[in-house]
Image (cartoon, rainbow, N blue to C red; front, side, top):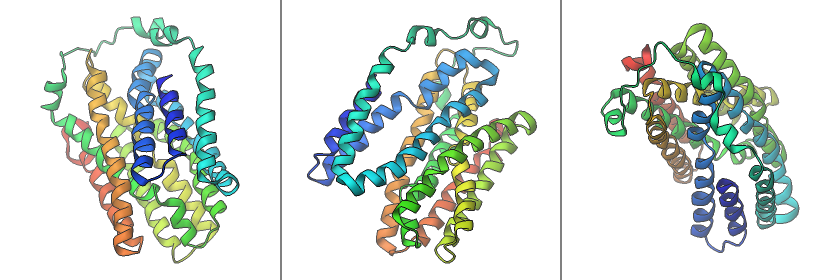
Length: 324
């Protein structure tokens, strides 16, 4: 409820912004706060009470719902801006967010929070609550390995994602084609998340994560080539590779953190690790824009993105707790 009210307030306030800082405060702070309330941490804790050992697959399916929103909202946003202007578009989104409060209020939250009895009661023979606290977790190398993976991956992905539509327009596609193409990344995201989670059960977590990074790198290279070869085939290949992997590692990283730091404080520990993703997203978006403004080219942005994605992958190559 708070997330929907925060988002609706942010959109309505943003529609009346008269300066850049007002827009940044409303969208950046209020929407960010709303997303945090319904993001990875509460979802992971809640799903863990229902699906137990099948948590990665369950998280992949739930997280992929974001893909449906991307598919609908990106082209819709472009249409609304063309017909109502950006202020009118934000006002409409604010009204829609308020309307979403109604069904959210009547959801059976107590039942959802209780979890499935057979999962809650089931004892895991390998489970041992070692009394992890946030302080003790921060002394463990796995904590900072996961934090850095979240951080650098988010920097690399969002350095590109924030400028995606503008780049595709510069490459020669129309605004609607660019928005629709990037919106379809939401469709392939579902297959990417479920596919990587399925691989996790077949070949193991580390190789599954590394494969997802390799596909992301291939997607960035394909996007780089689009400025010289703006074909629909190349655009489709980029959407499939980059779009399917942009959030595919989230469920596996979340499940890894919850497995290593199991115990009463796992929510606090995982929430702190997830701060790395938020910091990386904001730094990546800002850095990508700064590099483009400084160089008047997207090439430094792509090089920066590739370097950050590689840094995000390194912990799974060298950190013992993540290699197992």
